[in-house]
Length: 259
Image (tube, rainbow, N blue to C red; front, side, top):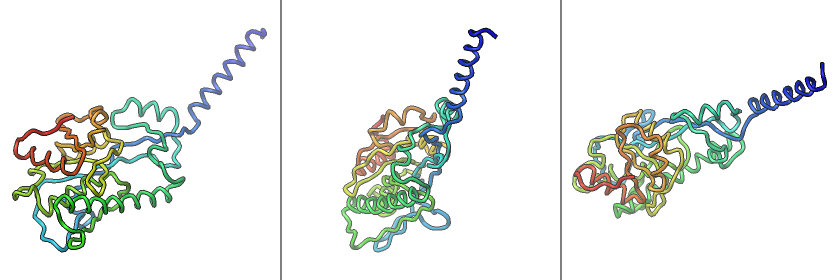
């Protein structure tokens, strides 16, 4: 074997080794998918998602569905072929692991963090909804129950559910107008709606579960349009008030914001 042939063989072996290493080495990414949705006006595992005491509630129609994503766990090994496949699929998203799991190094720590965020989200949703209606948190108590969901991204839909159960559109009608409305967004106690991430996957989950309208934080309009299912109407919101106004306009045929 000539020296040139031996050199080519060695180089080829090194290249092959590098390729195999790239294919087999775990990478700091997570692969996300459309998750579950839940109607906050209904029940979850036999219990009402929203229970209100200290005030009369309305019988509602239509649905207000919170949305979620699911992702490979923090301990999962994600490799180059997984990333390549994820880039080309519309029902998957490749995301930096720290964007999906910004806190915690294992499943238990992350679950605890997400549970705390969910509890805080429920408190702020209650404050935002009662504040929007001019009611007191001292007189009205709200219990929110939704199993197997963590994080703050259901805040907007929780707040809308409370408003709908207590007051509807303020004129005897449901906020939903009988539709299945889905959405996502964090919320502050004074009613400001914040961005959440994973919106293209959430619109797909909403479409899968029958929604025709999707409320999205205005800052995420571009992301929401990326893989928008056919027939899904995007409605951008910045506050709880703007979300309520948009839903009223949808029912009456008034002007509705659009992305």
